[in-house]
Image (cartoon, rainbow, N blue to C red; front, side):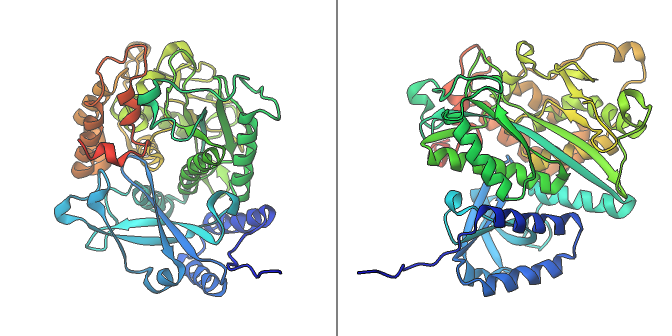
Length: 478
């Protein structure tokens, strides 16, 4: 006897998903009126009966992605009056001022692969607002979006970014959360750089995750195993900086979800294993206007323009002050190790991979700068906000060539990075007193739970209290 399926939830083939997500992305790139997009999305949600829920996500001050699933019918009635308890989010509001509002950024809308996220769901990014209805100062996505919008309105410039995000694939689910029990991570592959057999677990993971990213409109370029055992990297094309940041968050979410379905763990700890290469998130930056790459100059030094060199100079001048933003965890300072191509030197170079900033070979289309010191656990919205504002507005470097020629290094531990951040007038100007102090406070709280001297063994505490390891039960004990 045949039975009728009880549920008919939306499942979209991958090729169709890619078309839909690329079209939505193009609307953002074309700066289509958000009100027009809002009406389109609401009409779609009303007419598509197979959607059961809408996932609205936002990022906290430390860079963790938070997700709330709203029943579709409820969201359509209440999208302009969504609230949540901000005091439950580290770095957000205090208990006495806990209620925050959650707006819907309708253009930042994604159709999801049902084999990864489940059928019948779509995802949209949210914007956090205070009780007064103003964008919440701790929401770095809103800060980045506002800053770039003002820059575009003032000068017509668009800021672009592309991140090369490395990670590790370890055996077992929740390997980071169980690290204190085992004291080690177990590789799923030892194939090495560019080499992994088609049937290898790492290759299968990369293939599945890359397919999902392609379907979500990332514009994939290449993917491959990295230098260290069980390490991976999947590259996608550059985009406008807010879109690139959203994709950064979705990349990590997708990788974790796919890994979990394979009974494994995708880890974005900067240095989970001592003695092998760590993971970075090399951040490629360029600026355009009217279809022209403003960082390119034919015949310019290393092929980039005067604007690009001024941009580089300001970032290097403030490198110690902003290091905590780009490397926000205890574990991140293990990666800044010169024995493993670590970008810990405060300098720029076209070839030296130990330099904080590299200038890759480029054409008129691809000329850019690459900030190599960014860790994969950074709050990417905060990171790009910091890099663009510093590049355009930060203090200039030393004029004395003799002093500039000296090799300077980034801090090699988080305590020094916190001290430099707290003392920095530029960091205070960047974030304002409230966010500046909150960020330093939560970073210090994590650091003080870990040994000051890193040593040669990864300590359980630096994994357990890493801000991307979801362990609310443990955190609430402190």
